[in-house]
Image (cartoon, rainbow, N blue to C red):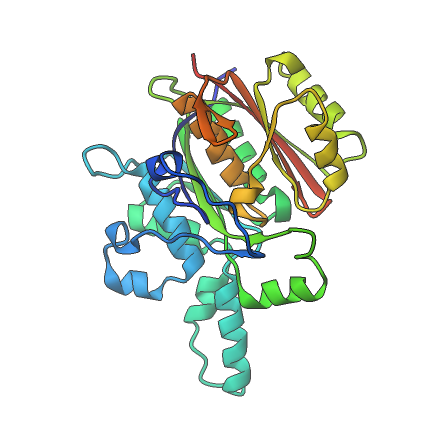
Length: 334
């Protein structure tokens, strides 16, 4: 069976992660408020057409930028993937809100369709395909807390059965005032919970040469009716790995503090990545990016940042609103 490797990765998050060196060479800033907006790069560097850039909403700019950054080669040209998979929990909600307000303000007449067109979940995947001139497989997943994982599983299946040799997977979600306020009124942002946003792109391939790390497996479960430790042990066991072979578990919990506490008190070494990115449907993409970078750079979390230590296996454990649970397994590409 074909092995799957992460060849390149790019992310926009509440940290300075678009240029990864900036994140690892400086002290990461833990989100302190209950709203963690993304640190936007200079979008005109990658989206050079001012007219197209002006018509793009924030979600589309983030998704297109990380996709293009992930595909950009050393000579400045753009690599053309065989397949493209996009993922979003909420889609272009900001543009949806604008369109609904326009309906009310204009009494359902003389409506500008731009906000409606830009609001659909598949817009940033479609925009990326148009900018690249890509005519191959291009699919968007809007599967709530499993959106990112569903896109990754699709890409892995395509690569393993030979339908594609390279696949670009991008997940993105944005903060909007309406969603934030609705969740605030329901008390969701209590107890240290924080709303985040970001975009995360990965170029997956069968080629080991030049790879950042190997993506061994992705698993989803809804709900989790067993202990988190048993869930992880069953997952890694099915991949021929023992608990002592796992160097780090990157935990991303929204609400399930019981399972988080269980993991923190287990024999696994854990690190909560959502302190850096906040909570949103595709936040597991940030965990995947962080895990891949740690393996690729030979780093591990330490008390005062990062320490030089090579991890062989990293597990990303993600939970979304006590409903969607997922695991991803990364391996050093020896």
